[in-house]
Image 1: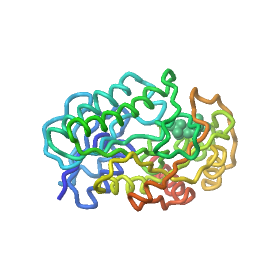
Image 2: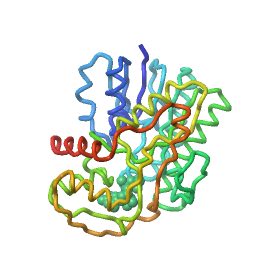
Image 3: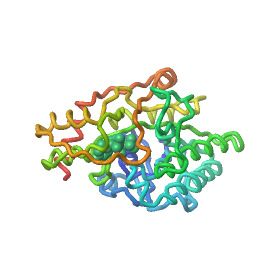
Length: 310
Ligand code: UDP
């Protein structure tokens, strides 16, 4: 039985990952500082002998424990949260990542870093392949996250080259599903809550900007496949290549919830990427992975979750 550490284990992606790893028979330790995650995401796992929770911030050296693998997901990921304390965001992706890597070096365990499509910034290449080096504004309000994740990738590669640490990097594109926080400010959670409450849907900018939305279960499968693959460090894009404008997303959510759509146009945030779509050729080839859940099906499950929980 594998012993797996998931940093950021109480967050949206982390808690879904912990649940699936426990169900698959692994022993799992979720570590989280609960800065923006909700412990209720993992409460149902606490009675399971194969699961434990540690309240800890990766900016402090990791506590002593014996594990075989680490998924490093610790970092606020939505713009409103990672911009609340940008210095902490950058620190988490540098000092925090060093602490995780020092732990991996000492304990000789494999570490998978959750990177992001944000490393491509406002991309000038479309769709984005892993070889594209990105277009990030180092001075803008998103830089603490974008440059932070770019630094995290660099640290992974340097610890691998310098100390032989067994590292892996995935670049996660926009993901949605159950356990997303209602107050996360993300487009999917905002639109669902607005549609369910009969409030106007807040579209930032023209609504012509695009994103490619992947359902959480598809991401978890891609992630675990990457962890199990030998002789491939990545980076690899894990995302759904079907692209929607933000207006199309609003229309889809209105259709599923049966609400009449009222739109409220708001200012586009600074440096908001105009388009985003992953090229997943590499994931198909190396991991035999492609997303399976279409948007309507994933949104229907997510809307059901929000109806039940909020
Ligand atoms: N967005 C929007 N209305 C909202 C929240 C977000 O129109 O209530 C837009 C946002 O400007 C961006 C897209 O939706 O263009 C995706 O935003 P999100 O914060 O979910 O993800 P990210 O920008 O990090 O991809």
